[in-house]
Length: 274
DNA sequence: AATTGTACCTGTCAGC
DNA sequence: TGCTGACAGGTACAAT
Image (cartoon, rainbow, N blue to C red; front, top):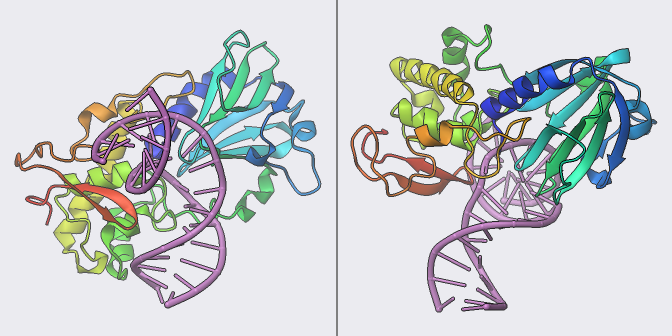
């Protein structure tokens, strides 16, 4: 499900609902989902802590808590973090229920059970594999065209695989990579180091543009994704290539093609992506 | 260093 | 109406 725009939308939708709230109780129905600090009990440590700030890094949601703890949430493919009333029916795959001091609940729901809730002291966050290895934030100030040009020039990899690599750039997933390449008119098989300067420039702009548009549309609800209030996004209606195999390219009207590349279903226009 | 395959899970959909 | 296999917004790991 969730790539950068979806996690950012979850963050924005949850922040006003849970910042300032204290955790009163916890139910863990599927222990595999949670990961405690060494020597701590997840529920015991979490109860009594309050939410101070929500941030996002790549596809990770960082819930900063009192006493310098942080609850790190990764939704992987089908995770949902939903704020709701305890009266709402408990749907299938509700793995963790967090009770808040205003009587509301935060529920972690995940059909495929790949997601994780990791609790750590804030000063230990830089030890978490995955999180500590993330590349630059594509919408951040330090992600400049000059840096992108420099980073890409030495990479002997297919551009699709490179953009999916969270160590190279944080937050892009299969949908937004396909969309960025489509808008930059670049074929997913291109070797990164072979791209001309103008092509890298175009790709840089396209990456930022699709992510910003994705956030503005409150994410892509292609299948399961909903925000922290259970609402779907709109970006699925503005996709150029993802999930549009056989349908006309918005630029040249040729049918969009789908092939397996970098181990993922890959959508592109064989006519204008070169 | 880069690529490929496998694994983790459940649900859905196409084809027979 | 079943059944089977392919596939799904991600990542980690091993082998080549």
